[in-house]
Length: 364
Image (cartoon, rainbow, N blue to C red; front, side, top):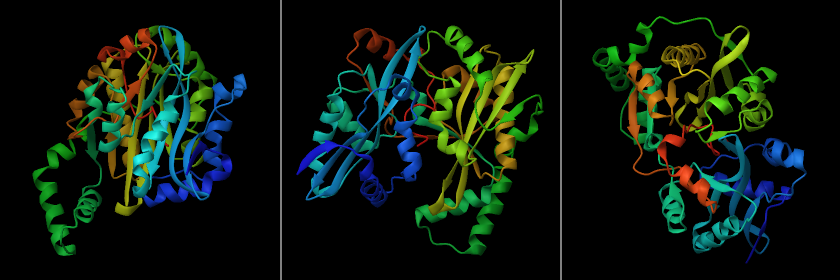
């Protein structure tokens, strides 16, 4: 058994290993682009490990991915890495520790984050000194149901509950009667139409990013330059699984929302996930209108659910005016670690975070 760095030629084995444990991996070209087109690596010609694998007799039985990322706080940049696709065959689970040790041996990174941890992963990371991201709202997902029948059928299928079409339709009829006000509450609000829809990021977003870095200087922010956003959301842009709503003043972008589409094939569900919501002016109406228009556009796009993950307490208060359903995780999926003591103090404070699924590898 050996533990070594990942090579691009390992793709097929990594994908097969991940698929056996219901972890999705991009197609090979898009997977390679994560490292080949990353702005930090590309612009600075930096060598970066793709991750590490456990190999037994030329067979890969374990993997941990190492995705580069960049954040800003108080106009200072911090370069970090994201844990991705950490998976090990049951027979070799004891060696999972070796993978995380290899991952943490990187000495040139300011911080590390993990945003898609399961319960076992969370316990392991905690044992190695990782901290929970302090915004507990990240553990509470908000939902707007756009298609009750599709969501009900998906729930029944997932629960292995015995039913037939007659019973399903009867339950759906009852839900639409008793929960009608809550399900359709978002429709009662007047929808503003002064937004532009984009499908990728250009120089207009760079102008806003420079202002956002100053306005939100006390928030730990993922790099939202057009280079980084186009890299980070490359697969969604390429496959047209995303839309961007912008609000402008005097021809300049002052706020935007990003939604990505996710397909749950096993349950035949199409979700729209709000992955970003930012503004250089914290106007409640601007945030509210962007969320409302995002829901409406998702509904028109044939989505069954509109999902919101994370965001600051202030933004969530605005979102809750639409009366979404809420589901709480029993554990935190978002952890971080840093050897930089000043950065550690920053990241331990809830008010310095505005987390969403734009962070980490949630969108991969």
